[in-house]
Length: 275
Image (tube, rainbow, N blue to C red):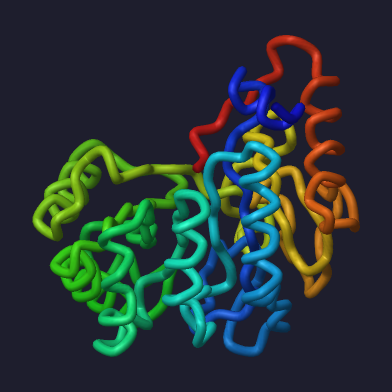
């Protein structure tokens, strides 16, 4: 058993490895960590590189994968890649839920037989308040896409990212996602993190290593402490949570992350409900 496998088994190190598949997006969300928009530098990690890293992650003893962006579904190969990744380790892919054409939905059908989830952002139970942060027509596209995925057997999680939400509004949102076919167990509410575009709008909470789970995150720029680490502000990559510039072989950043985690004083586990 590798040192990573032991650390994951003992819950010293989280089991998931994240891949930043890309940085460009069809939306320009107010609180975006990476300042993603249609004009953003793509920074694609690449299909073959993600597959190779997934195999390395499994060999090291990691137990799950995450794919994020940008909007990963702008990559034409993503549906088939997710199936190949899920055949290696269980995978969750984060999406804004607005680019699911009928053809793309059909290409995702094989995920129904695999350990895979698509996590879709839905922040508010009404269109106006949701779209104020995420862009025009976002709500309509998302509530249209979710049941179409569920009908095909694809497991969907919903992520709600907000500064705050009242009890009544939260209950309306929960009633909505239940109607769409997503159970309470697959709905997470998390705070906006004050990185990326959220800084310019004065939104969110400050978060550092003591607040964020140490989930190894791989990008074209290097390996980071958390998927909330490789953020962009003012067009420049934030490097305060950079672990190593080396990403392959994966054992190099994995060992570096493990050393950092093991070197933390007792009682400094992550505090924020962020996943």
